[in-house]
Image (cartoon, rainbow, N blue to C red; front, side, top):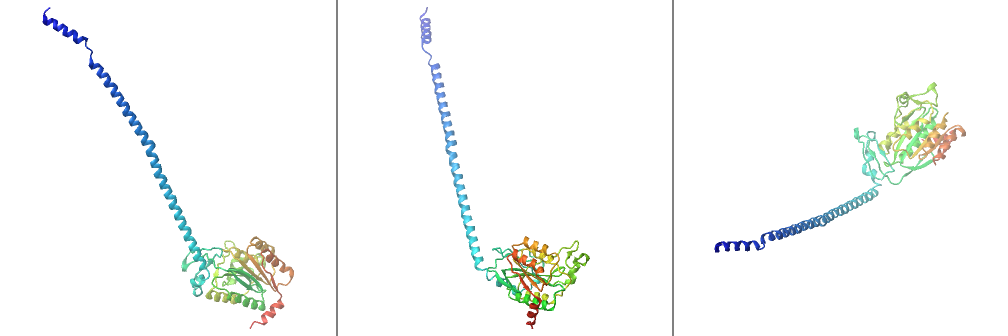
Length: 353
């Protein structure tokens, strides 16, 4: 063996017997990378947890603050609305009495206007304005109600219906006294008082209507003086409230004196018209000189509407039996009944110039 070959073999043996460092290095590198990746994953997971569990409460906190601000804002707005309502209420209360003057009703032509006044309301509600200024619907609190007297009866209110007998049995003295007493009562009213005058014989009609023309809408089977019915297809008008201005009182006075008497005596029809009104009457003054064959129907109607006071006036009715249903009306509604004999009426008429 040559020396060169010997050294080659020796070198080969030496290199074969030495450990191989590269393989061990690769193993440690893999471990390090694994640890690094695991650490990175842990950091990423921790960051995700922090984002989910820390940032969300902050958003909820913002939402809660907005909700609190909204609630507080609503409370402030509600307080402002309540304060405004209180101010308006106080203003309305302080101005109740001069309402009629402010509207200048005394100089208005009221045939073109229908004033419907609800005394039970505290806030003005104006609507339904139609042709010629239309139906002006006023829901006004007119303050203290007025004490009214008519033919010896008294009542307090702001809405009065007068149901007045214009039957042919009403003689000259009765008509003379009734007309003076009714116009005298109207003269005491101011613009804050609302009235409606319903005249009747057999048919019922409003003050200012021609009774003969009105009778064309009514029928009486067998010409029964106590049984008048609206003709088929026709309905009696719903009376309207009239403000007692100077102009309207003058017109009503003319109607009272110009209306002629007519045939029949039926209490039911004028009461049906009065109870159809809206708003409803507070007080009804009912004056008649004649009994009727079916008074129980009218008495039943009055009892059904007992919240509306009825003050009946028997104006020359011939006997106590005829007056009995009128007394029953007054008792059922806490009203006042008054009776006049024909002799008493004659003495009253003699004092009128």
